[in-house]
Image 1 (cartoon, rainbow, N blue to C red):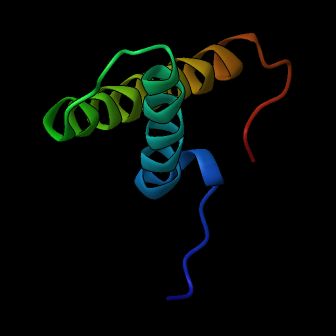
Image 2 (cartoon, helix red, strand yellow):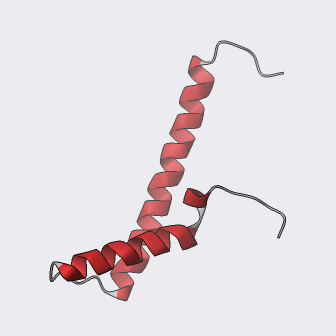
Length: 68
């Protein structure tokens, strides 16, 4: 496994964040089922990918130098 990616590109990290958020919600007497947690991870991953893509396009549009 030689590939490197940012922490926020990892579904495992987002799964951990959702698990922590779920535990915090449990303290407030809210519950998050396993299915809901899985859907939340998938949704967050999709949103993060879309934001990353938009940021890349925006960066290229406003760039002042050519790619060489």
